[in-house]
Length: 379
Image 1: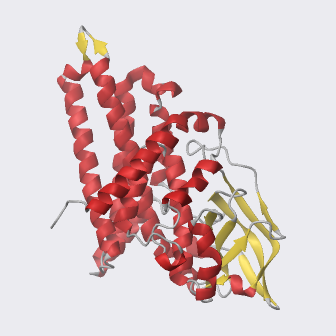
Image 2: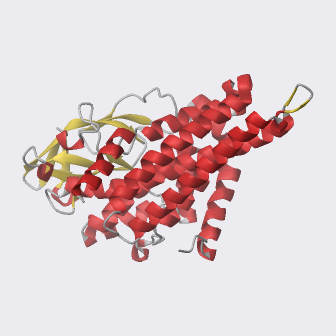
Image 3: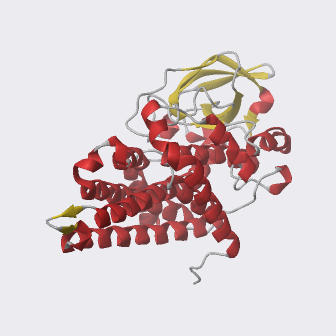
């Protein structure tokens, strides 16, 4: 086993970390407070090669692996997990088109996605189907050389701001085999969006409902094969779960670093609180938990890169363990800051609020346990 990063991986990680420090961290609190989505900053990811991380190079992608992506999203989230996580969703869509789309679809959409000329959103969850994703009800019916979509998607990051939407819709029976994936362009008649949701965290990215009312899209906007959409969606989620875990890890690392700095500066009973053993033990546990989470995350990413038989199980384990651990570390960091941690000015309560959703989206951590147990019992 070799736990060292390659020279290229170290350079990629440092590039993302520098970008986050220069362009995300200084404005993160302001964006959170005002609910501002920094579209100019998000589109600049294309110039860095971060909008098509695992898209093949023939269409302008970076052709990197899942471990590379984990390093990138961990680094970006050190500056702002909300913006870093939005980029993860965009990359998930690009990867799905690259892997499952026809050659014509790849050539049509991917050059614009990897340059960030087009931003993309992923539409799976519905108002009545979250964890039970296969129960989705949005339907697409054939209408000549078009598909006609009716239904709604909920909690969609980028809704109303993205240029392209990949939606899972029902084209057949009520089983998972009846689900297909569709590519829908913003501005398509019949496509509309709900009001921006008022959220606990991730306030710097728009989240809203996506509505289809007799929304007609060309037949060639069917992604890949009819009836394969649910399989595409589940395949995309393995990598998405790693990215969400990596984002949680990066933000929790930032919380730990803020805590170390605060503990050295803050004095109580005549000395820095860093000299109190109780606080030292808490910091030691936070560091240990983050390092254990990082090791599991990188291992899961390696397995997904190498398509090992247990990759899905490890992605679920990593998502569950890393996001739970990261939230716990962030909460401990807030406690170390005391009353100041509860104030918005210090940025600690933002990290806690942002990281709470990482335990929910891309499959709740309860669903992760279901996946893990299913693999164990099938052995």
